[in-house]
Image (tube, rainbow, N blue to C red; front, side, top):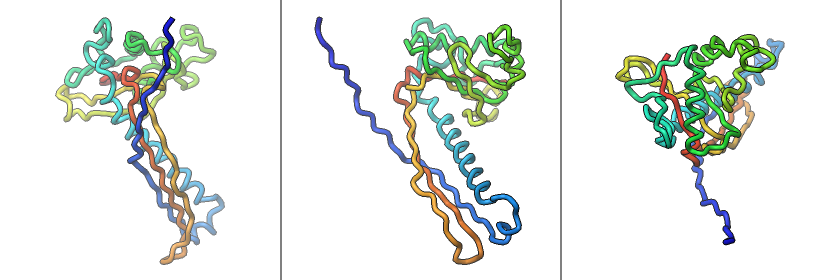
Length: 237
């Protein structure tokens, strides 16, 4: 049998984005407070940066998804899944949301995407519909507790479900359908490469007042490296 030498082309990931925080704490407040305000402020700054990064990534990567993984004729082989397009988004309800999740699984299947490490990110209103769907009955999902009781989405049709307010959205005025629409992403972990690094975190005294300043900088970059492993539903409530 002929031998093969597996090779992977080099991929260049551009780190060209960043987020920073600059927190100031007055010495008087620091002395009078019985809690560590500075740590509270920096913890909140880190959470806000995470939200900003999520919004930046989720609001951009959908445009690089493989063309057979979205639209009214999604599915590389069958073209038989309607996942919505601009102007005619699909309307997701608690009666059909499980169907749409399984459609996404079928779309990835037709692109030979592995079953393992699949994920889906949905807006919070979709998560509410899942909790109100048939899966609220734990006996149907096979979980020890229902999603309604635990609040956890868990795994549905091989997808680990995440709820996020950072899903890319299109205002009603920007879509001819007259509805606010959302890009709900799904895929495999190999579809997107992401890298980040905290370049600098420092604490210093203000030269103009009695304050402590803590500031930091995080840089990051991302790239869709396997488009066939990424897709989205264009949906409205």
